[in-house]
Structures are given as structure tokens and as C-alpha cells.
Image (cartoon, rainbow, N blue to C red; front, side, top):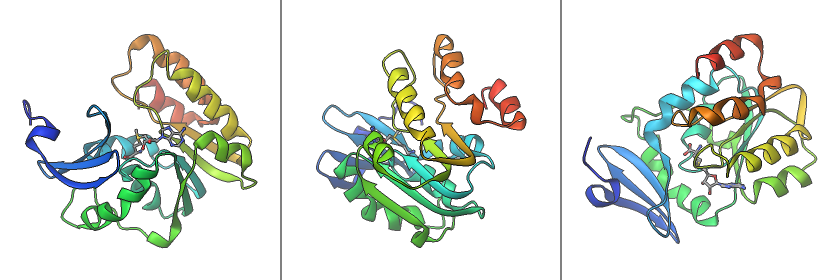
Length: 209
Ligand SMILES: C[S@@+](CC[C@H](N)C(=O)[O-])C[C@H]1O[C@@H](n2cnc3c(N)ncnc32)[C@H](O)[C@@H]1O
């Protein structure tokens, strides 16, 4: 609702160290302090549905857990065998059990049913995991940045490059597209991973998903 601020008008429902989750208008907001740094919004679930589309399959890897909303979206796809999520912030990892019951509530708009046993969360820096793992993945989803701009594009490029090493044949890499990205960065952003998108996916990309 316009004019409302989640950390003033919402209710703090979970906290672990620097990570705090608020509930406002029946939606969750994750900030990682200090300074009310908003890192994830539950309301983005519809963007995840749109962007992930039919891409998740087989053995999946995700960099950046946040609220775990995208994880749920990936895991609800019947073609997904397993999902490993890498999250570098230990507070974000340890807050998850507090969120599970809330996010599993079947009255929530973002609720997806999925098998929890298919999900593994590791507290680790994404790049280090990518350099060290010997596993291969059929689908890799990168969502570890707050925005797409000149500061984050080099880090996204590095993460895509490192992901290529752990991608199986015919595997796919997708980076989260922030719809508020300034026009000047959009082309450079999509160029980082468009070789992994099939013609159908490229048509969607052309329309900003
Ligand atoms: C935008 S949020 C992810 C939102 C998430 N997709 C969701 O559904 O809520 C980004 C997350 O990536 C984590 N992160 C940032 N840099 C990272 C890195 N280099 N490796 C692993 N995790 C990282 C942050 O701590 C944060 O939890």
C-alpha cells in the first residue's frame, strides 16, 4: 500500500543477527542491516514465475537465498530433481527455519507445494562454491545482487563465468532481471547469459520478460 514503510508499519516476525523479516499487508520483507537495507520482497514471486518460466530442470543451483521465494518457485517445477542454494550471509540462512512455517501457509499467494527434501541450503560465498564444487547443474539461477548497474555488472559477469564451469551440457544459466534497471545497463546485462537462452526464451527477453 502506498505511503507505508515496511519497517515502520510492518511487524517484525523473524530475526537472526543482522537479518530481519517484517510482515506488512500479509507480505514478507527481508532486510540485512544495518540501515534498513531491503534485500528481498515476497511480492516479487510473480516476477520469479515469469522469469524462471519453464527453465528449471534436473539438478539446479541458485546463488542467493534471500527469503527463499525463488527457491520455492524453482522447487515447485516437476522437472526439478533437486536444488542447492548458496547463501553467503549466515544470518539469512539461520532465519530460514523461522520463515518455513509462514511461507508454507497455504493461504499465501506465493505458496507453492514442493518436497522440502529436495532443497539443500549451504552457507558459503557463491564464487567460492562455484570454483570448488565438482558437481554439474542443469539449471543455474543467479540472484545475489540488489540492482543491475555499473557496480554490480562486473560481479554478475564473474559469477556467470564461474557458473559455466559447473553447467552440464545443454544446461541453462539465468540471472534475475530487476525491472527497474536503467536502460543503459539492460543490453550489457542480457549479453552476459543470452547464449544459454533458447529462441523462445530470447523472444521473452526482448520484451523485458
Ligand atoms: C536479492 S536477494 C535474493 C532474493 C531471493 N531470490 C528470494 O527469493 O528472496 C540476494 C541474496 O544473495 C545473498 N548474496 C549476496 N552476495 C552473495 C554471494 N556472493 N554468494 C552467495 N550469496 C550472496 C544475499 O545475502 C541475499 O540473501
